[in-house]
Image 1 (cartoon, helix red, strand yellow):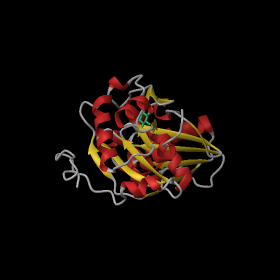
Image 2 (cartoon, helix red, strand yellow; image 1 turned 60 degrees about the horizontal axis):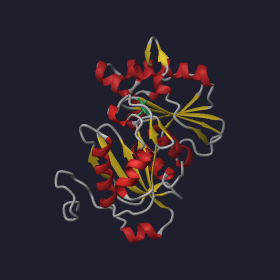
Image 3 (cartoon, rainbow, N blue to C red; image 1 turned 60 degrees about the vertical axis):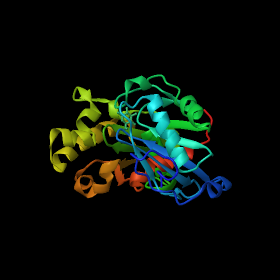
Length: 272
Ligand code: BGC
């Protein structure tokens, strides 16, 4: 357990099923870390299949979620997996060449921080960070709802905010931030993120009308061939996705909670 291996007792972590010697020996394995507002999750991923080959470890996101506090958690996640290979990180902000450039739903102290340098220095490993929706989209395009799909594909994640991943013939255009288009005078994610449904205490039906309105707007701007709808609410897709009536084909993300981790693993070891 984490405690036996010297991890702090306040974190409940489960043991990875793959030990370091197996993991490092296999060049197909990478550590993927998915950072969210409440939790930081990590697993070893086989990037030839997208399968998690270890247990997922989860540590609560520190408060305040400053770069150094988060770096400490990344170090713990790495040691929990006894990992010493490349690490990929998915993060809920604009991440341009490893540098954080926005802070809509994260601690403002992240602005302009070189995340790759910070986490690489803390862990002694090669760490590369990308936007969380870009990571989830990469995973869906490789192994999930977008596999073998060409043309313009837009992945949208509905959570605290709305994240987006734009693909043309499978190639990512990073950091599109389509949750922040202005709709009815406000940031679209303020009305159509999953968090807005909780905040406004509205039905799935009413929330679905907001999402449909938003999708129609994105449809008008991009004429996509496919929307992939993801985020935590994709687990209860039956409550809202069938209500969405738009011209573009809509599919539900397939990798659920693992999309961020698996997508992060895909970018591990990438150079800027
Ligand atoms: C952020 C994006 C992020 C999305 C989902 C938005 O508020 O601006 O960078 O992808 O939330 O976490």
